Image (cartoon, rainbow over all chains, first blue to last red; front, side):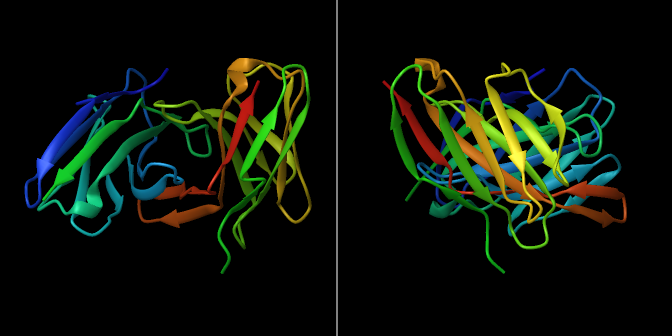
Length: 110
Length: 118
C-alpha cells in the first residue's frame, strides 16, 4: 500500500525550514527519501532503517518513528537548489520492492 | 565509475505495438529495478532483477516482462501497448550495503525513457 505524504505542496522563502512527512499503514524495514527535479531522475537523499538514520545529506536530516511507521524529512535553511518534488519510498523487508508516496512539491523562492 | 544509463530517451509508439527499453546498471551493482512514473505521480514498482532472476513484481500485467543479462544490464519489454502505458520508465540499480544498523540497498536511478503511446 502506498505511503501517504504531507503536505502535497509547500512554498518557502530562501533560508526558511520545512518538514515533509511520510506515513505508512504497514510495518517497515526502511524509508528512502528522494528528490526529483522536473524532467530529471530521482536523486537519492537519505535512507532510514529501524533504529535510526543510516545516511544523511547536506543540511537535510530525517527521522523514523518505528512505532507509528512515520518518517519526517527536515530541510533547514533552504536554498533555491532544494526546489523539486520529494518522494518517500518504503520497504517492508530488506531487498523488497520500494513503494513510493505521491510526492511533495517544494518551491523555494528568493 | 559510470552511472545508470537508459535508452532510448524518448519513444513514440502506437497502440498494440511492442517496445523494448534498455538499462545499463552502475558498475558493481547486481540488482536492477524498473519503475513506471505517470505525470504528477510517484514511481510505481514494476519488477526487480537480482543476478538475472526476477526478484519481486509489482501490480503490473504479464505483458510487462523483463530480462537481466550476465553483465547486469536489463531490458523491459511491454507488449500490446495501451494508451495508459504512456509514462516515464525509470530503472534503478543497486547492490546490498552493510551498515551498522543492517544492510540496505541504495538505489541509483537512470534518466528514464519517456514513452508516448498514440
